[in-house]
Amino acid sequence: MRRWRLPPSPTSSFASPVVIDLLAGIGTQHLAMRYLGAMQRLLPVTFCTVFAVDASGRIETVSAASSYGSTAERTAERYVAQRFDLLDPNMVWLAARPLPKRAQLWMGHQRAEEVADPAYRAACYGDVGIRERASVLLLLPMGQRAAVSFYRSLAQPEFGQADFKVFEVHAELLAATTAAHVRSVAAAQVAVQPDFASRLLALSLREREVIAQLRAGRTAKEAARELGIALSTVRTHQYRAFRRLGIRTQKDLLRGS
Image (cartoon, rainbow, N blue to C red; front, side):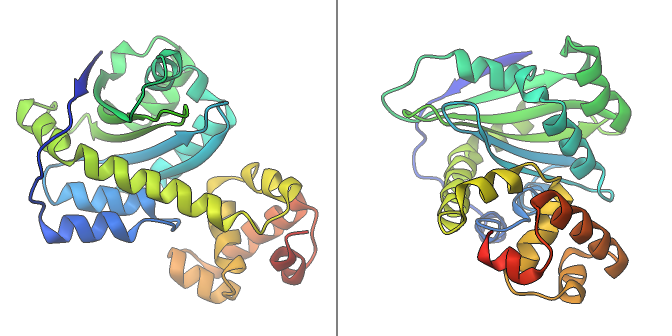
């Protein structure tokens, strides 16, 4: 396991499709999916996760995507439910660092066998066939911290220096879009009552995705089409989410009460 500081980079020229993919994820439920698609234009990766917390450790953003089905989303749900962020070496290391005067960027590289906790290692690496991850780590002056990680499976070659160079070149862009996403989500929650917002955070990732679609005014059928899942699956997540939120109708949901 290793980490290295990324100094401010000179202005870089990025491929337009990569920039478009990254920017398209801001403020949406598809942040990690957009990141994954962008980086797959440049190098082979299987998973992407985006995890951000505020200075107190409260989770602000969780997004995950994979090349095969909803594996990454389910893994991220376990990560949050079992609070693996408290064991994640990247997040623990960021939390222990002194606050900088200006934003700091780091690269991190971790292999599965370097994860000490067996439950965390099994859930996030072994059970899903992941070999390693490369992470862009962001620490802000007010204590907010984020990790944007890309993963390779056991079927793929190990990350090499050329791969790390690609991440380094795009690190500032990834950090900027992630910070913009966190601000966008926070702004969208201003109109939501505080207790209701806390209940939203307690939902699973898929439940939050469905709720976000419904709060945007879409029908369950439209939500199913947008998320690429069956209508019956949307209905199931909607029922469970409504029950956990303590509401009965979509009008209650839109009122945030």
